[in-house]
Image (cartoon, rainbow, N blue to C red; front, side):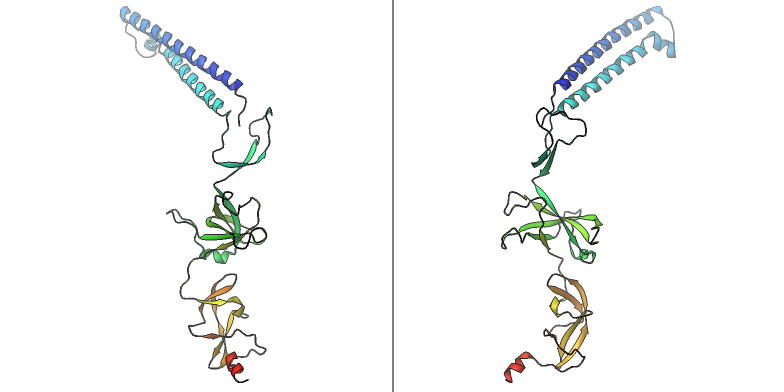
Length: 287
C-alpha cells in the first residue's frame, strides 16, 4: 500500500535546502573566525576565558554547527516519513479485510487492512491443570514442544489430519471451564491438505510424556472410588488403585495392580470382597 507521497517529497526538498543553507552559514562563520583569529594575533592583546571566546566568535561558530546538526536531523526525519508512505507487510500474508480504497483519506492510527501470516497458524486448546505436567513445552535450549495431531471430524475425511506441536502456555485459565489454555503451532496451514481455516473448530490429540512402571487399563474397568476388581484364587478382590493420569480411553495405574493380575471386566450384580468367581471359559466348557 502507498500513501500519496507528494507532500512528503516536498518536505524532503525543503529539508535538503535548509541543510545546504546551514552548511553554507557554517562555512561563512568559519571564515569569519579565521579573520577574527588573525586580527587577535595582530592586536597583540592578551585575553582569557569568555572575553577571548567572544573575540574569536566561538559562540557564533557553535551556533552554526548546531544549526547544521538540527538540519541533518530534520532531513533524516523527512526521509523516514517519505519511506513510511509505502507500507509493506513484514511477512507473507493473506488479506482478511480491507478498510480503505484508492483515494481514501487516512489518519494516524487508523486501521487500513487486516492481515494473517501464512507461515503458521496457532490453534488454541484447553486441558485440565492436572495433565499439564505430562506435556512437553518448548524450552530455551531449543527443545520442541510435544507433537499434536489435529482433526476436524465434521469437515475432513476420517483418514486426513494435520500435524502440529505445542507452542506456548497461555498464562490464564479459561473463564468458564477453568481449564489451562495453550497454543498449538501448525506450519503452512493453507498450502497443505486439508487446509486449516481461521475460526475453525478442531480436535487435538497430544502425545504425552512416556510413563514407566505403570499398568495401562481400559477406563471402563476402573470402578467407583478408583477401585479395580481382580480375580485372585477364584475370588473377588477389590483393589484400591492409584491412577497417575487418564486419557480418553485408558487409565495409567502405578499402585494397586501387578503383572499377571486377572482384571474382572464383567459387571457383577453382587460386589462383595471374597465373592466366588469363575472364568467365562470354564462356564462355557461345562455346558
